[in-house]
Image (cartoon, rainbow, N blue to C red):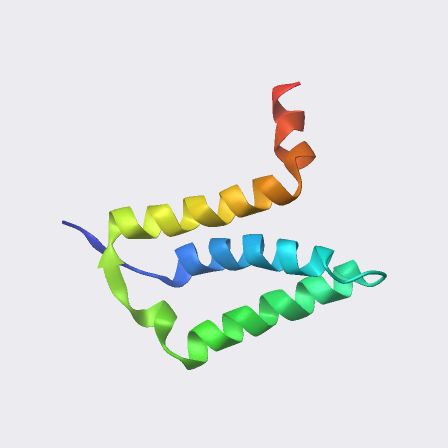
Length: 83
């Protein structure tokens, strides 16, 4: 099977997680979103998690999980495409 690095799936996952965590902060959601996103990406790079190679199916599942988390946080963003 084809192997891929986790860099892009983890980026998509970090987008979803940072959306959830920034909504917990009241008042400065935009700044909190950027700080959380950059922090997650730095942690992934420093711990070399993003360099790991996995089966492409696992990468796709990680990316889908990130998109699902973001969809559960703000469903209106995706539902506007269907209206």
